[in-house]
Amino acid sequence: MNMQVAIVGPTKAGKTVYLACLLRAALAPRIVARPIRVRPDPESPAAMRLSKDAVEILRGGAPLATTEVTEFELWADLPGSLLGGLGKDQLRLRMVDMPGGDTMPPPDCSIPIEVQRSVAGADALLIVIPADSSVRPEDLGSRLQHLVSTSMGLRSYGVGAYPFQRVAVVLTMSELLVLQHGSAALGVIEGLKAAEQVRDLCGSDFVREVRALVPPGGDWYSLVSAFGFDLNTGEVPIESTALGWRLRLNGASFLDEWCPYRVFEPLEFLARGVCWREAY
Ligand SMILES: Nc1nc2c(ncn2[C@@H]2O[C@H](COP(=O)(O)OP(=O)(O)OP(=O)(O)O)[C@@H](O)[C@H]2O)c(=O)[nH]1
Ligand SMILES: [Mg+2]
Image 1: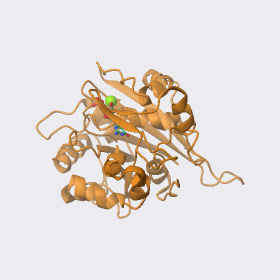
Image 2: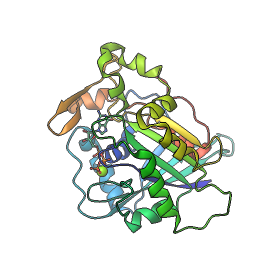
Image 3: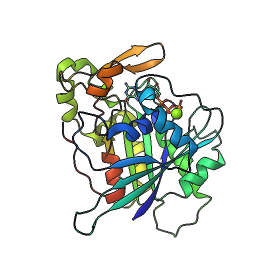
């Protein structure tokens, strides 16, 4: 099945870095082989540029500020069985970016028509939320409600039907949740339950809004980190700078050591409705 996925989230949630990470993660040297391939749509200049700049973005060369509404179009290919390709899936990932980058604005703000169209045309939603409380809005439930109710004005769906088949909530920067644990950080995050963390950090009204969008079982929660962990030490390889969090790996060490954390799981869930756990 070919599913359309709209990627949304508040400003500074880590959307651009996550997309750059997806485009590059299959090449990460330490990641356990994952047969999902994410590639830019050749017809999307923004996605082609992002793919080219992905390493630079992940290494801390700041993503260029968006000055006009821009559409990123990516494909995620999930393989099927060796015999006949049974279970083969494809996701079309679409993110509308804009100056300020806020596709989930507060209820008193208007939502650009391009964002509304992208949400109205989607079978599934990928909602990007930052674990960092200094950039995470507190009214995420009402923001989500505002986004969906405004966008769904462009689409008709039957009474009793759900707006989407599936929704994945991606909690980016999730390594920050275990920053204080030093070399035990990776071990500690492996024991956290994503759905509980999302409810604790974003509130049960947000989770209620997510659940209302999909049939029972259609919601998924992931703890994701584009910067990831140092697998040699179990620590978090980041530092705080004037420009925000940065990966502490540079040059050759990035190419040898970078290990993003559980970034493909949301895609697999959106495509298949189930997903394998990524092991470390
Ligand atoms: N610690 C940590 N910080 C991250 C991670 N991903 C992104 N960030 C930080 O978040 C900042 C914003 O990330 P972006 O990807 O630009 O966020 P965005 O949602 O695209 O933001 P706008 O488009 O500018 O609204 C980055 O400059 C990093 O400092 C991550 O995995 N871990
Ligand atoms: Mg951005």
